[in-house]
Image: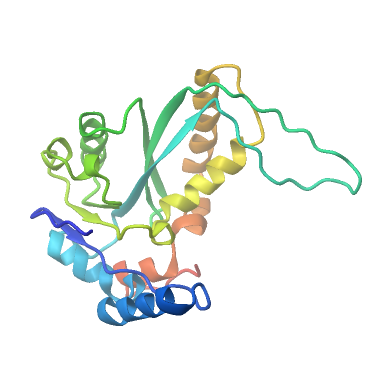
Length: 231
């Protein structure tokens, strides 16, 4: 169910990939696509305008990632016949990485929280506003739409539900996972330190950030008079 707030705008839904679904579900998805259009076909401009956000570079896409000691394995390359062993830590201890990325300008902002409620998120959003962000696109979690975050005054646009492919912050998270999955850390502090090291290295390489998150359809929307990078 979509919910609308006076200070936020709802993005249009994205078109599903060809052949992704069949039958009634596919027909329903196609009908919805015909009604709303795709985010990469003008929906972002409409949503930013409705939220009072300038349609220009400087809009960041944000999301959060839970990281902890309970390890995950991932596929890795190995010589034929060699058995790969990846150790797992099974303790439940977590931190939340709250991250925003401006892929066109090659910039990252992030902070760590112990909770994802509105009280914990509000200082993060306030810091991003102080850093110069003039608009934020992220999903419609209740804590992100609550009073503590809205009181900060940073205009936001709500990403469509179940549309991770629309958010370049997810692409950054893929690289964070790639750097850490299949390994264990003795303490939660060690996990956070390792991710911080990776993010600091990434933040020092704007060209790498633009390659990961400067998607062509976003560039075409926010800087239509300039050459757009390939997605």
